[in-house]
Length: 295
Image (cartoon, rainbow, N blue to C red; front, side, top):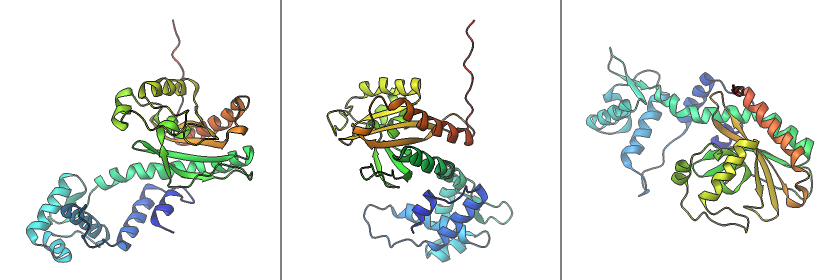
C-alpha cells in the first residue's frame, strides 16, 4: 500500500504529534530519483533533499554536515539552508548556528492533516448512509478546480455508481464539487476556470454566470444537485462540510443512477446527506451561529 493511500485513509484520527512522527519516518524511507527529468528545478530538488536530511537527523546539522552528506559545496549548502530558513522551513539555533526542521513544515502539513481528520470523522457516516440508502456515498475535497475523492463506499445494488479514492472530477459540474465551491466569489471562480467551461453532457453548465446562481442556491438550501451534468444517467446530491472556522473543507455526496434519484426522492435523500455533513462539521468544531433578530 502506498504512502498516499495510507495517509488518505487512516483507521483512526491522527494527532499532530503522531502525524509529525509519521512524516519523519516516511521521509527517512524515501529516496529521491536522480535528477534527469528536464522539468525539474535542481535547486528545488536539493532543497527537498535538505529537508529530508534534517528530518531524519539525530540532532541539528551544520553547513559543513549538510554539504558533506549531499556532496555539494559548503557555499551551495549555505544558500539552500538560508533560503529554507527564509521560508520558515528550517531554523538555525542561536548558540550552535546549526540547523533543524522549522515550524513552517507544520504549516504546510496542516492542510493535509485537516483532510485526514475529515476522512477519519466522516468514515462511519460514509458507511452508514450507504447502508441506509443502498446507494454509493463519498467525501471529496477541493484541489484547485477539481474535486478529489478521499473516502467512498459502494452502494448495494448491481446497478450502482462507483468512485475511486484519489480520483478527481471537475468541480463545477458535480454535486460534491459545487458544494465545495459554494462560498467562492465570482473573482475566485474566474481564477479557477477559463470559459467556456467544458461541456460533458447537454446539462453541463458552461458559463460562470450560470454557475453563480447555482452556488447561491446551495448556500440557501444547504445542498448541491448534479442532474446528469458530468455522466449521462447519473444524478448526485451533496452537502458542504465546514470546519471550526466555518470554512468549507470537504463535501459529503450520494450518487446513483438517474432513474432512482427522482425529484420525489430528493427531500428524504437530502435529509440523509445534509444530516451527515452537519454531523461531521459539528465534530470538526463547526457551530451554527443563530440568525440575527430583526428589530
